[in-house]
Length: 85
Image 1 (cartoon, one colour):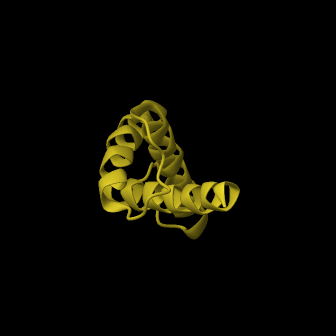
Image 2 (tube, rainbow, N blue to C red):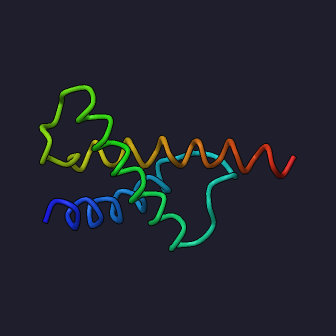
């Protein structure tokens, strides 16, 4: 159930992160934004478990997932920005 919960939280976090993240290089498209949000939730879970904030079975919370999604969206913007330049 933790895996499915991380996907749901990542979906919502991706949508919120798109509104929070500044810049023109953000992904255009609902599907891509939510996929990056889900990836961000998994990144936040992985980092939280590596640092010791979460135990092995715990996932990132809602705020952690948003922070992870913002980080992934900023990296996406940097990579796509370089490619388009």
